[in-house]
Image (tube, rainbow, N blue to C red; front, top):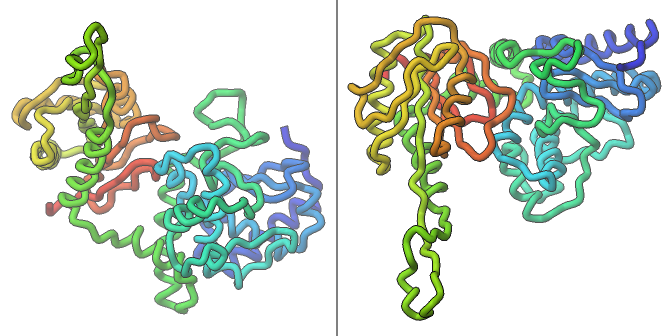
Amino acid sequence: MSDAPSAELRHKTAAARLWAAQRFPYLASVLFASPVVWRPGLGTVSADRHWRLYVDPERATAWPVEILGSLFVVQANHLLREHAERADALGLADADIGYWTDAADAEINDDLVELLRLPEDDKVVLPDDFGMERGRLAEEYFEQVRVEARERTSPERGSGTHGRPQPGEEPSPAEGQGEPPPAVSPTQADLIRRQAASEIAAEHKRAGTVPAGLLRWANARLRPKVDWRRALAAEIRRCISDVRGQVDYSYRKPSRRAGATPGVVLPALRRPQPEVVVVCDTSASMGEDRLEQVLAEVEGLLRSVGVGGLAVLSVDTEVHRSRRVQQAAQVELVGGGGTDMGAGIAAALARRPRPDVIVVLTDGETPWPHAAPRGVRVVVGLLGERAPSAPGWARSVRIDEAG
């Protein structure tokens, strides 16, 4: 467990949050949501993906309030911009963590660094270091950094930046390992992000002083402009093409070249047929007519990309129906209880053959798994413009009710 801080250090931490909130009032909801965990020897400030802030008490004692507050702002931005969830979506290898950390820092620093006071021994990473213009996304910087195979320059970051649990971080609240410090749930995090986006937009309208990167993030969060049918079709088509592009050898069918090698059985190359599973939210908050309409749209999209038939699961907090269908009329929408799309995803993963693509249709009022399922793409269709966002590791498409 962490060491108890002195009263003076607690007061200094509170002052640092106030300093940050005064300069970035639109980030106050993020800055004050994160509980502090003291970690002697950490050497910096970091955050885990459950929004806990880890602070080295020795460094915090030595730093001026402005530096401590600036580091809180940096971590708030990692959490706000869902860098951990976006890293999950990329499926980073261990060797990529440093590259992603630099890219995520560059996304934050490109228009915030001049407003902060960071430790002199921290290397501030900027897009200029990669020969790229400012105002891009971390994913764009990441590709450039990885191509260059640059040495990592950012200080160590926690799982709130790259998604990978680090030594000294407390366990996930869902792991049931004793009593970990308080954390922010995914649902709470989504509400905080929506509040921050609204406050950023209001501050821009009032004073026009919001950094451009944060304003772009807020506008995308508040006013997503997307043709959901086209976006969902494109995402499913991309997922399926990835699977179809994979080839493997099989002895179930002999190779056409077997005649050239008498006495030797040669395997033939095969292309796997992608398996698609649709998880339908049938909880009490879902309207049956809307759900049937969206399911019919998704079925049409799947047919258009060449998938004949798909597995459909009706789920509230448990799976009530699971069957393979050829058309929407065969779907049985049964449920009417609470909501847990994690149960539907788990049931889809347990199917044989294992799915390559899972499509979840939901109003978003649900808990989600903390991490992306391995080896499976997840596409979430969010029903209604007010539906809470899906986790960053999934590709989400917002489906407006008029559609």
